[in-house]
Length: 222
Ligand SMILES: Nc1ncnc2c1ncn2[C@@H]1O[C@H](COP(=O)(O)OP(=O)(O)OP(=O)(O)O)[C@@H](O)[C@H]1O
Ligand SMILES: O=P(O)(O)OC[C@H]1O[C@H](OP(=O)(O)OP(=O)(O)O)[C@H](O)[C@@H]1O
Image: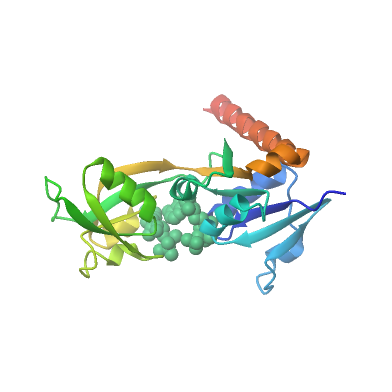
């Protein structure tokens, strides 16, 4: 008897959009999942032996890459930041849209880039890679949130962060100066599990079909 499949999902904003899609794919967490008082981190699924685990977005990729979870949902920002060899992202779920951008203090933008910069970000690899392409050495100050404070307080001259509506940048006196990456949420799987467990391949096909269906429906109603 194969062990239960573990499906990792982030606990924050992707979740709201992911749950209806998961339900259409037959992945429905039990009632405890919705109980705000519960401290459980692992949940049974209705009508299946699958377990859901609810973890931080970056940790979804770590659990799946190491095979501790076989399937997950995470932003393409996280997939690109880690670039794990054992992690495969076969389905663009067309939810969780945002982008990763460079921002700096509004009114202090400069035309030419210096050879060395200090940048605050939660994405050290993507940040370094972006500036390397421009011939700039980026010293990354790793922050886990509230990046927008860094330039004003002199911690860095720029930030690299997620932008959706642009409100957070604006309300903190920053302006977007270049876009690095368009982002959407992906279904991710552990490569070895995909090869050895047919339930993983079946889930990939189910999500792929759902996304195609949703795109066709959106096209038809446009
Ligand atoms: N405006 C936005 N700000 C942040 N993330 C966004 C935004 N819009 C979409 N996303 C996506 O949501 C992901 C974060 O997912 P989510 O908030 O569900 O995770 P989390 O576990 O709460 O994150 P964290 O570890 O940052 O608390 C990002 O990696 C990105 O792909
Ligand atoms: O362009 P906007 O619509 O304003 O969204 C962008 C903001 O949302 C995210 O932060 P989040 O709310 O996830 O909080 P965090 O600082 O804890 O990451 C991101 O890091 C930006 O700060």
